[in-house]
Image (cartoon, rainbow, N blue to C red; front, side):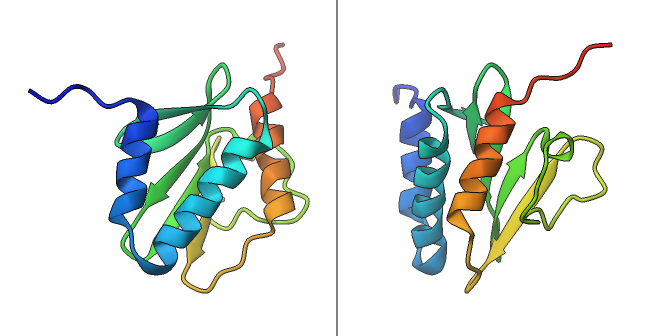
Length: 124
């Protein structure tokens, strides 16, 4: 019986299974997200890489034609550089879909990750 893999092992397995631009972008995004905030922790939920900080912050998903960074509370944080390009009608989440050849504003992405990691809901 195989021992259960931890989150990093699962993420490494997904990363190793990718080829071409998706492999390169996945590794780059993983590092950018992980380095954006000191309190972020890698996790593995729903067969997807998740970063948490006292709650789900963002997820990095792999699809046939693109990668998706989903921000669980993206609708509630500012996106001054307009990186969100998917899920714009959702009540809470917002996403960034990345396709082959797309460039990412790395500093703006890390700003979004920090804002999401530090987001505190306002209680009434």
